[in-house]
Image (cartoon, rainbow, N blue to C red; front, side, top):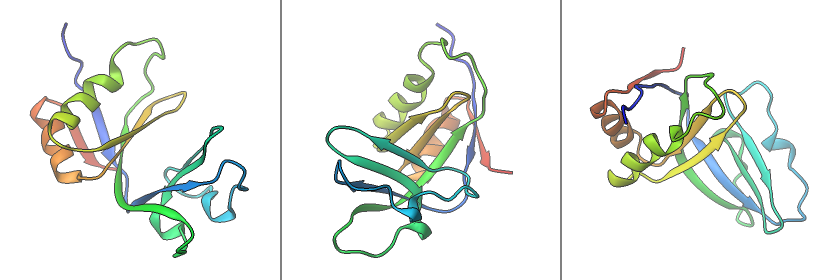
Length: 133
C-alpha cells in the first residue's frame, strides 16, 4: 500500500490537556472562539479539554498536563479514507512521541508532547511539516 504524503501545520503556542469531572460545567476559559484549536469532549467518566495553555488557570484543583504542541493535518480529505491517523500516529509512537488525536469533519489534529521528534519522524516519511500561516 502506497502511503500518501501529507502536509501538517504546526499551530502556534502551547496547549494543555485538562481533565474535569463528568458533571462539571464547561468553564468559560475553555471556550475561546478566536484560537486556532480547542476541543471539549464529554463522556460518562470525564470532561476533557484541550486548549491553548495561556487560557488554563493555575489551579491546584485542576488536573492539567501542560506544554503540548498541536499539528494540523491539512485537509479536507474524504472521511472514509482509511488509515490516515494510523499512518501518522504509528510512526510517532515508534519514535517515542505521545499523541492525542482529534478528528473534525474536515481534518485531523495531533497534539504531541515532543514537537522536534514528531517533526523529524514525519519528515523522514516524506510528509511536509511547516509553521501555520
